[in-house]
Image (tube, rainbow, N blue to C red; front, side, top):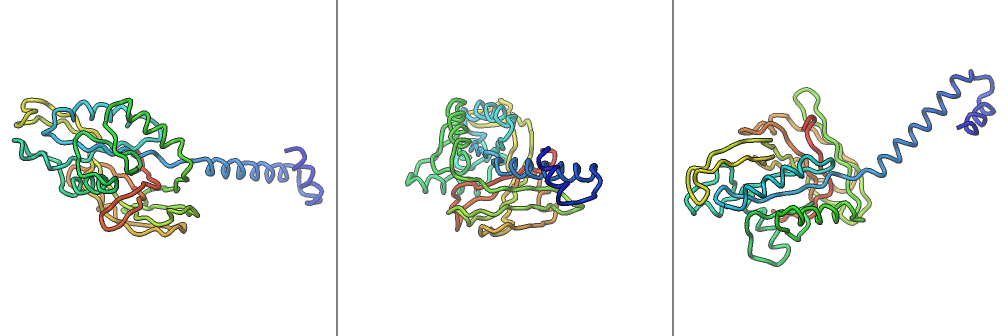
Amino acid sequence: MRLAAMFLLRCTGSLPLALVLALVLAGALTAVATMARAGERSPVVIELYTSQGCAACQPASRVLGDFAREPGVIALTFPITYWDYLGWKDAYGQPAFTARQQAYASLRGERQIFTPQAIVNGEPSMIRSDRNSLERALRRARASSVPSVSVKSWEEGDRICIDVGASTGPEAKADLWLLPVMRRRRLAIGGGENKGQVFDYINVVRGMHRIGAWTGQAAHFEIPHRMAEVTEADTYVVVLQGGNEGRPTRILGAAKAPGF
């Protein structure tokens, strides 16, 4: 910093020393901020596919809740519908989530899906939802050399604003999605193999709304806040994900709502 100050003194002539030092400090802070942004990684997104008709899903939900408290992790529950015939219809299950899980399986060339099952950052290999498997998947995601894309979300009045950064990587094409989320809910199960049990839900996705396309250039999006205000949702997540025609691929970036 001393060398920089001396250089500025030579270049600025009679400028007051305090002003010179202020300019030096501003430049240093800008450089630090730039380096910090360059080192940033997007949060790791865990998708847990569950059903109220699945006996093993409640323990998996508790594991997900533990990971949801970790910095740099967005943990989400996607309730599916294909176990509804077992005697209890999942109150939060959506056919679109079942189709999403099937699409992930199709990418791996597999036909079998099951619950509980987890997907980390949209990678095509689906893993079981035990703690050790999730920890290994998180380590792989964090150590990945594939660059993530910056996604920032904030609110202005009745609008949700999103900035998506630029990328020169090979995956410079994706869709931006809004996912309304219900943070917590306790629900008694009235039938099926879990009859009489109480489920504690964490971060249940209540829908998926496509915001728009991203083609690798820095972009700004704004949408009405009411798009996130679906039944029982009290927050939201923004996800930038590759894929087309209902076939999701790798998640390139994500952001939580303010306060989530």
